[in-house]
Length: 108
Image 1 (cartoon, rainbow, N blue to C red):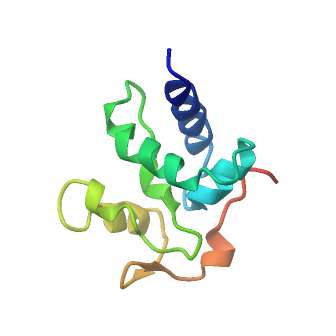
Image 2 (tube, rainbow, N blue to C red):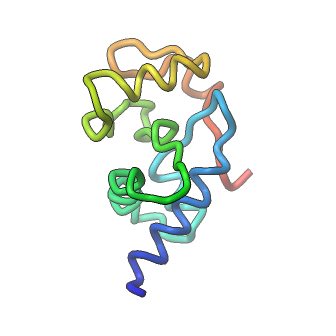
């Protein structure tokens, strides 16, 4: 098993813990895993998450400013936004509104 496979598995474990109606960031997951400078690798894991045997709520992972930077990796034009809105999260122009309130920090 490659190191990246192991890292990706840890990322998926954390992503599966994100509560319904909440979001976290690539960087928050990286920091939680002790790899603070690996936010981009968390993004790569999210891009690969649809290949996992168990569902990964990748739509709940956004950038540090609450932008839906990974939305082009979802099928359709607005699936990421639609999934978030179905959980009660308000998104305007790819930006999560009230980001501080809906942000979930895995460290806490």
